[in-house]
Amino acid sequence: MRVCGIDCGTETTGYGVVECENPRAGHAPQLVSIASGGISPPRKAHLPQRLALVYAELVAVFERYHPDIVAVEEVFYSVNAKSVIKLSHVRGVALLAAANVGLPIAEYAPLTIKSTVTGYGLAAKEQVQFMVARLLALPEAPQPADAADALAIAICHIHHAQTLALQEASTV
Image (cartoon, rainbow, N blue to C red; front, side, top):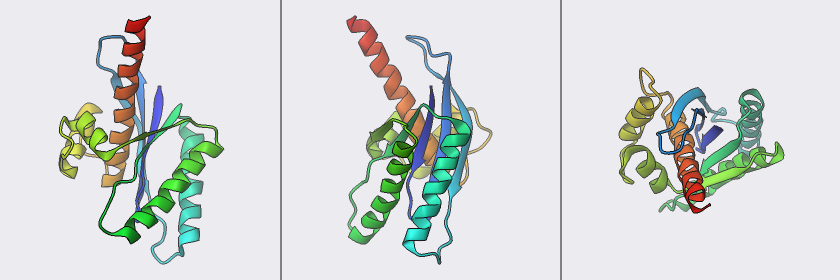
């Protein structure tokens, strides 16, 4: 299974492609980082142009790495409504890009992602980065931080998919 995680952001949208090699029932998945990075449109560009660039870059990532599924973080609630609206625009573009190339989409709450990767739903960003590097056997935390978050989203999906597969196998 190859998963593309996307961490939507107003300044930088992170992406991370993780592959699960040789999944076996009852064993931890063997995770391999295929690619990661950040999409940062020019700050001075108007919102429609920024969104168009994010869309085009995500489609290029999907075409280059051929994920089986895209995993995206759900929108979290914030005191700043304007920030949530901007973030929702980017998230909508990410969902549209995946849908337009025919990829299924999984969505996870921020607490679920953090607890899956670190064991603690309120983990700090640095803890998530550390665990992503450790789980993927990387020499250092991926940069930018948004890429590490995107890899965490992909890892979260792989773990949840494996758990669901084990549950389904035990009921058959």
